[in-house]
Image 1: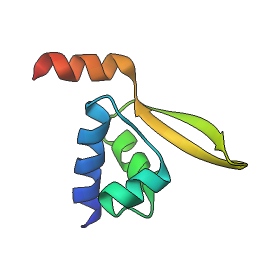
Image 2 (image 1 turned 45 degrees about the horizontal axis):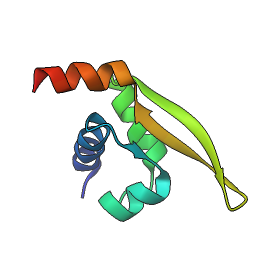
Image 3 (image 1 turned 135 degrees about the vertical axis):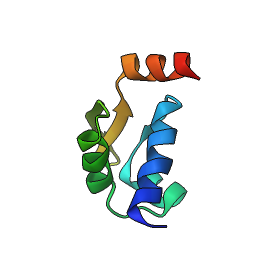
Image 4 (image 1 turned 90 degrees about the vertical axis):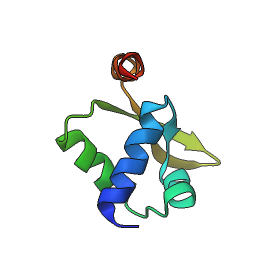
Length: 77
């Protein structure tokens, strides 16, 4: 899957109100560089929030689309 396909899949996933972590991105979309894909989406105008999460002594980013943007997108569908 190329980066544009990954961007599209991740954007749809976030628009559905889901969050995503690097491990989930790798498992669901074969994306090894989630931070780069998030940067692409932000550059395209998506308002994506980052939350640092700690589990089992490991820290990693969890991303979600701003709740207002999710509602706007849902209203358009």
